Structure formats: C-alpha cells, structure tokens
Length: 255
Image 1 (cartoon, one colour):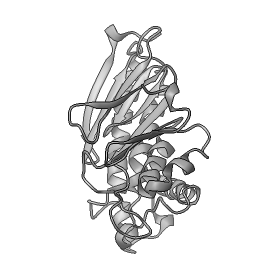
Image 2 (tube, rainbow, N blue to C red):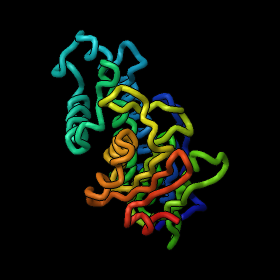
Image 3 (tube, rainbow, N blue to C red):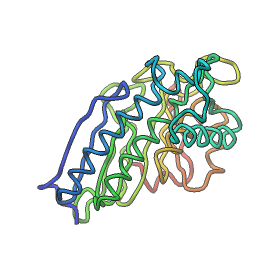
Image 4 (spheres, rainbow, N blue to C red):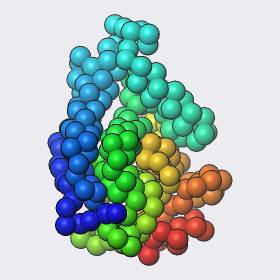
C-alpha cells in the first residue's frame, strides 16, 4: 500500500527540463536501484534524441551521417510511434518542423512513461513521474487517496484551470503557450498555432497522451471533434478569450 511517510522523491535536470519522481511504495533496494536506472534512462534518451546536441543519433541521422540501421533500436521505436501519431492525427502531429527531423513532441512523454515503467517493473505500484509538467501516474497517492494534479491557467498566472484527480493509472499532459510561448507549429501552414491558449489531455499512457495533446493544440478549432473520436482520452481546452470547452467525459477527472 502507498505510504506518504516513506515516500522516495528525486528531482533530475535533464533533456532541457525538470523531471521529478515521487514513489509512495516502501523504498526497497530494488526500487532504489530502479530509480537510479530510470534517471540513467533519461540521460541516455537525451544523448540519443536531443536536437541540441550535434553528436546525438537523431542529429546525425538528420544530417545524413548515419542511417536508421546504424541507430540504437529505440530510435526505430520512437519513429514508428511518431508515424502512428501522424496517421492518427491526420497529419497534425509532425516530426519535420521547418525541414529538420525533430521527434521531441513525442520523446519526452515516451521517456517519462518508460521511466515510470522501470519503477513499476521493480515493484513500485504507487508512483508519479513528472516530465516537465506532464505526468504519468500509477496507483494511489496514499491509502484511499487519489493523486491530484493541478493544471495552471494559461491566462491567469497563479491560478489553476482545473485539478485532475486519479485513483488509478493515468497520464496528464498539457500543451499551450503559458510556459514556452508560441512553440507549437501548425504543420500545414508552418505558422505558430494560436487558436487555443492551452489544452489538457488525460489518457492511459503519457507517450500518446502528450503527443495527441500537441496534435490537438496544433489543430485548434477542430480539436474537440477529433479528440471525441479517440477512445480513452478526455480533454479540457482554454481559448485565448478565456472561454473553455471540455469533452463529455472530462468531468470524471477534472473539477
């Protein structure tokens, strides 16, 4: 059972952001080793996929210095997941922004979910892994206590737009302009997406939840109709004028 009194916590600066681990299981040697392995995994992901490192595999692949068969197997896995996301989103998710190969829109969520899985495989059943504000939750925060994830309001600094409550495995991802400005590009026009101020998506695993949140934000006006066709996902969006919309099932999770 989860126990907040014995929680194991760790913060790691990697991949250009902050990752935090909150483990509510008794910290056995296996779980402590798994936490170290999860942190190591994040640094390996950075070395392989960072578009800011000239020596990363993804940068070298983009420049044509190596071929896909020369890359570690996780590169093929990530690119296959990206291809699936591109197809599922009707092209609103793209890994070719401004002519360069950049799977970053999927990698962070994938790395966070993988780190969570490493802990789970070692016996940690009640965990929260936060990758730059997007979280993969497992189990409960405490005995009979659900996890609660506050989502910042994109237009009102210091306020929350909702609190997502989950007493079971769940992923929560938010795309928007509040933290990093207009960084999500409409892949069809090449211009920054600006029809939404933020979009929060909940789903089973962070890899696709984060990716679909990015695709939905880029899609803008058509996002709600598209998201309602996806099984297992619910969303809350804030428009630039402060209006909101929610998919029908979001009330199960958010206030």
